[in-house]
Image (tube, rainbow over all chains, first blue to last red; front, side):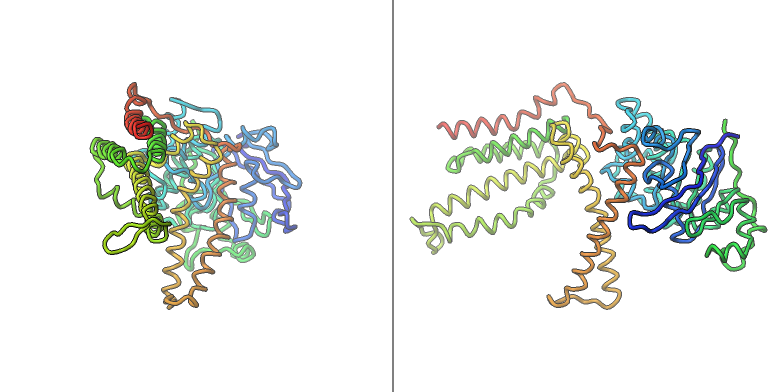
Length: 255
Length: 234
């Protein structure tokens, strides 16, 4: 199976000198759903911002579908990697839902009928086509999250990266989002500290702490490792045994 | 009617109103008649338009002071000596401001904000200004919500601001909202970059322009401009 994402020995420090990533190495195969787990400040979001070139590493490299993330390739990289930010209000900045969904493909050069079809398809994929003329402000939080997902689906990405996708979502919205992610059949990275969601959706997880990868393996096994959970300041709710929970939703084979 | 034609029509109408000589009362009657006709044709509720004229309030206060503070000669109105020049000045300000505000209210009542923004872009208003207006429209609501939540959180902890010396908590909240908005601006920019933003907002929707759109839009400002020209020359 070919690699959808390959991160090699990535190092990054913020301009104020704070070191955020210390040699992160990671591979995600085509069609795979992987969770990046870790406490606040582990470097998860910083890693995410490297995946489509928002941040530039001090050293190391990122490749998406074999294409290195370099300034010359940014346009194609940003088409391939769809970032869904934690707060949909950061992502939805236009006055109308359809304009926001059209923003990405329009930047890629689509216009007219092609742009309208892409926009409508993406909104239909997330079940929000009826709200295409609404203002984002008038949508519920769960609906805004789905529209935020549509804004990147409209760019036809190869890799979806979601930052804390379940924060502030009610159980029904969590379930709907999970169904959408499974149905999309895309390679997906879910950056979260919602361990049960990771267990439900991702057969594999990567645990990060203080800018390093502490562990990489099957989600249920990692979550059952008490020592690892303590070391990475994570933990399941009291009484939950991940080995007794049904296995993660299958990653669909790509057609 | 295409949004850019509507925006241009309102702009032309306002210019005609502003240029109308203040003494030509009949011309202001024509302007008002044009607005009433547009309002009726568009099916806009009069109360909706009148509510929006509240934004005029500071101008009304200023205009009402003019007859009192204006120069001589004066005339006696309702037992008070009022400046003739001040009365004409107040009339001109009130009439022109009210007609302009009503015209803009009719535009907003019949055209969605995204359409107005697209209209401005189509009229070649600088892209940067349209981008700023787009972001402002969206984030004013987000920030207003944030301030509302802060207020509830303050009240829930026993805050009961009634006097100026109790304003500190509110001022601190506004300050922290400013900082948070700045940080949000950075995150929004990152989210835009991640979708291939290169510095210019792209055209994300196109409006169909009907065959008679321009002619219909030109009708109201043409009438107003004719009245203005007749008044100015006559």
